[in-house]
Amino acid sequence: MIRENTDLQSRSRKSTGLQTPLLQFLTGEHAARIEALWPAPHEGFFALPTARRHAIAILLSGLGGEAKLSTDRLAHFIERQKDRAVAELVVGPTHAAGFIKMLAKCGEMLWSRGEYHELLDLYCAENSNLVLRHMESISQLSLRPILILPAVLRSAKIISAIPHLSAAYDLADAFEIVGRIKGDAAQRRSVERWSKAKNRQSLFALATKDLLPDGPVTYSAAPALPAPFEPVTTSKGLRDTALEFTNCLEDYAWTVAKGRMAVYVWHGEPKAAVALNWNVDGWRLAEAEAKANTELEDAPLREIVKTLEAHGVRTGSSVEAISNRLLRISQLTDITAYEEDLKLKSFKERLDLGDLWQ
Image 1 (cartoon, rainbow, N blue to C red):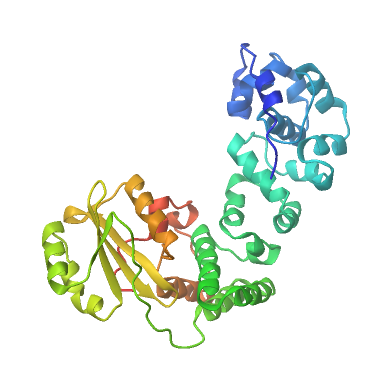
Image 2 (image 1 turned 60 degrees about the horizontal axis):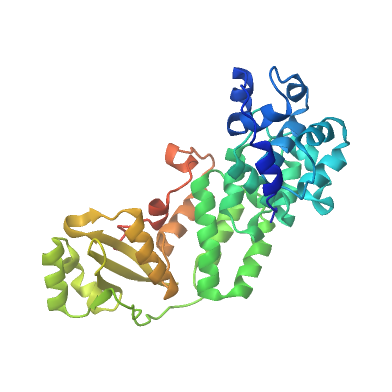
């Protein structure tokens, strides 16, 4: 993890000068701090190679190593020192090799502080370091599938086989579920197998196979959730809950009776009906809504999810739905990525609520 250099950040914020439109366009949130080092018309900054512009933005954001330099000395350092020295100032000697070459691939426009933080974390991790150093160009968009996948899956072969962000989410979820169903040893075998996949079709076919349990899975008892959760355990209680919330929960009476669904009333704000489904990997949050099927805002949903996850309940798509999507990707010759496949999913979208049948 990269340390934050708050001393340098505070010094660089003293500027009250004006920035040219070009500087503002290229540097965004960093414009004022860069103007403090290179006042208008900013020739010194514009003369810097792309990689060094990114390096100074990272340092002025308070990221990187300890830099006991005044603003004047820092400008001179970035302009005159060798690439290795600049890299060591940002990421330290352990990760300095290839760092400036990597930054040169990041485009002319500077990134936000948060985006640099993600970039540095990836660069300082073993698997993703190799991926970044071998990419022809690096953008915020190209980092997204890497950030979605767990660290052990961030190999060049796997990353290059990801057709869109939705596939990255499903592969990451599949890996988690393999661990839930089969344990850590099975996850390690999946990493080894997936990393050797020859192409996209092979990778997603392997993931589909690994997701399938080795044998029949028996139901476990529904979790005993603490207040403000109240379990609904009788057919009358289910009927009363359906009437109170004006929803269709009573239609699932047989599913509840067979132990495949568990229903609770969450006495929070607002009051909500919560349904869990049994999947091959255990219990999963299938639905959480207020009266008249009104969607909950993020805050109460996060409160509900926090308690559920503490009791071993998974959130997200059903195992069957994930498996079907993985299989489809493995079978397609060409893939068309729709708009929703290219966007990061929100917290609520990741829950994939409403899938009561699986």
